[in-house]
Image (tube, rainbow, N blue to C red; front, side, top):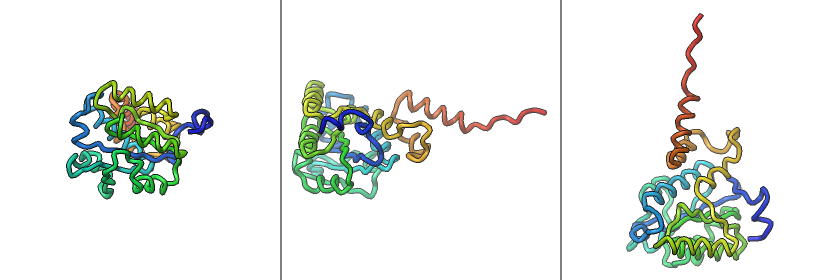
Length: 220
């Protein structure tokens, strides 16, 4: 990642310059996920995927040895019913040319990655893609490792290499950018994504309720 791409307005994500790569959110990986509560990672990756879909950001799904490690978690697959995940044998996703070709076919240079586990299946492709000229953003709260230390060391290693750590709601904020903007995502799509945003999602739903509540007619 070049120095100029880390600062200034061009450092921020937009729906037009981003592509999302989701790696190995499968049962085997969840079975030894210890850096985060598994339910939290499921919630966050679904929120991230819904956000990408709402803003028209291309999303690429991958699995590793799914015949042994299990299929992609169903809530994630359900968001992209017509997309079959790229099932790999390579531990490093970026060594599978089908994945690289799928990313390059989008024409986007800002690569957002989330996956299990952070220290292997996120760090390895992130490091390689960054070395090949992509601006890489690792979504730390939609990824997790076999221990808190493993996740933390992976994030530190990626940061040293110029990869940007980011959270899924920060991705959403960068894609929206302006609350007056109405051409990016529909209120329905935004509401679906923000269902996963805790108190923020509750407040957003309340705001939509208030905006859609008819004003009583004034008494004459």
